[in-house]
View 1 (spheres, rainbow, N blue to C red):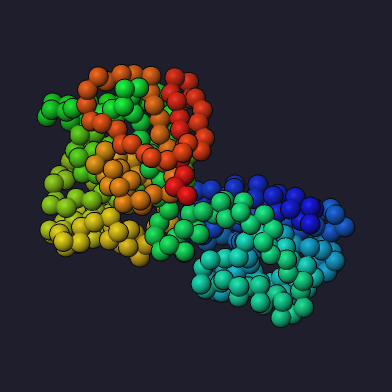
View 2 (cartoon, rainbow, N blue to C red):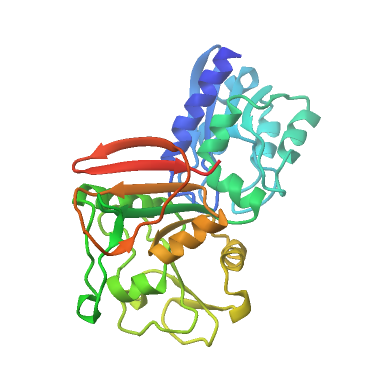
Length: 347
């Protein structure tokens, strides 16, 4: 069992390489072991690409070794035809005699079906090895399928005296009031590349005119999600530059703009649970909520959040917009140059 745990941990190391690249799919790593020696490894590198089990199997030149090997994988092998054929069929056909699985797939198209396919042909299947760690790695995927909503990460920067922004007048619009340093901003762009979507409120768009992209990091730009109840956003804003997809939640009317999707929601249903329903329908697995204070407080008040990532910059604003307050225990904290970072989980 100890060796099984070690090899599943190796699967998790491999799976993490797919962070931000597998999109709606889970992160999966696979290891093939023969006589306590790793003979093949693989991970799911990108959405639509080969699954981890296929890559691991293809890395082995002498396929005859498979008949005496164990395949380790952090998530149950798939059993349905999607962008690729079922991995459980391949494992069955190659007669790999033993499969060790970290966690069962929560997707109802797969859940326990892949395991049953393997068991039905006489393969020994072990499940639940390092299950907690496996679920945590794919927490976005599990939340999406089990709670029928995206995984929600709140993020903001606040001053040492507890403000998220200065009080703006019209002359201050279009200029960001930076609280955190450059290194922290690079890290935030990395985070953006790891999530499917990013959400900010209308006031933040009007005051900061942000790009909401990953220009300081390599990766795919997130889908921009903006609740704009009464259609206050104008054509000259950066979110309408067509560079990446923008989703506008609105209650009034639709406008024809390039690479923009409008979702009409009636005024009496213009609330967070309905927003999340719409995002779930569009296979948006995770969302990074970056502000402003009103939107962040709405998520906190409703309890609809899974993680919070908060920077406290080495500045004092003395007055301004009060930062949100979390009544939760700190899970992790450290310093990034002059900024203090705190990480929270909503267990």
